[in-house]
Length: 419
Image (tube, rainbow, N blue to C red; front, side, top):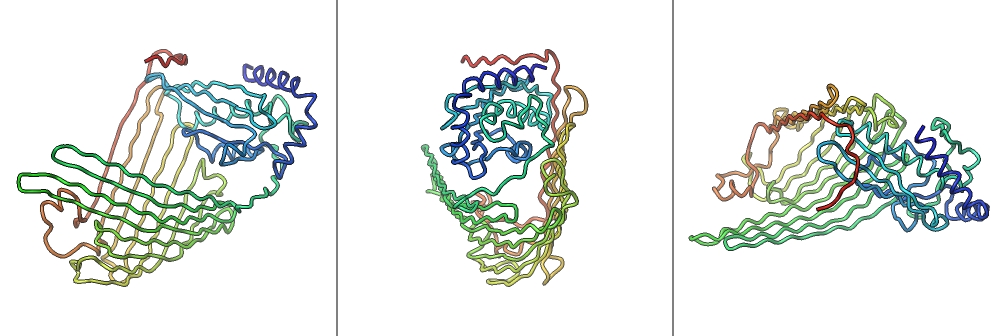
């Protein structure tokens, strides 16, 4: 009832202000959008963006606030162990610059992530109502929005064809009397995501140097890791997709002067892909070719190697009101030697067992028998301690478990940021 009253107040107040200019605003909005819908910039680092886009499909999502008619800014403030208070601000721009308001959301700590994101979507639908009232959807807008009645989205005119580019770089330096360190990284992203394609091109460069001053002199550790990661994935239907993958690596830690892996892959999803934000079970098969040019001769007496490999992965993800589960298993080996193989398992479980009590368990286990690049010869104590080179191992393991139990008052939703 409270949500209905809020929506009714927003609709009546904003429609009264905008009634004289409704026709002009509607025309202006449609001229700025190829399908006549409002453009929204979602500014939220604590949101499941894909879930929001699926739940509110009757707006245009833009990546730059300058392109938007509405800037949704989500801020949050933690209230100790009780939960988090979110403030969702709706900032009008262009034809809607006179419409500004905000809605608050209190999320108790006992909420699952799925429950909180559903409540965020509800508030966003309420807050967007006054803006939608000035578009061609006004005639279909009611106090109770039926999200099951969706209109057919029209193609958006995009000169960039869904390509997004990003340059990044950074460096940090630290120094004290007996040691100093410098780390630098930079690279580039080129991404395209559409209904039929998912493409990424990413070159990257990393350099690290550490110096330790001792009575016997200065010990220097230098490492670099440069490379390229890319893929092109093509949608076949709601259950099948295929792709091509490519990686290039030059790394002192991995004893690689130059390495390149590339090959095709195919994936089957037991559930339709459009349900992936809630549930997914997938099987993925990849095969490919690997060229390795090593910095030092390996323990297998190789300076250069040509290898063929394949892998099979099974993964599952469920996001429900009771919590979430992620798990997967991957097996791979080289064709020249079936004993050169790897079996990797990961899991992450977050459960709300009863009111106020939540349990989390995560773990990774890799059975490793495919480290073909381990250099020949003994490692020095400096190389071991400073992790300058990769060491031989038969397994890698990580496990974690934790729980929380929250009790007491359900109400602590006042924002107080003093001190």
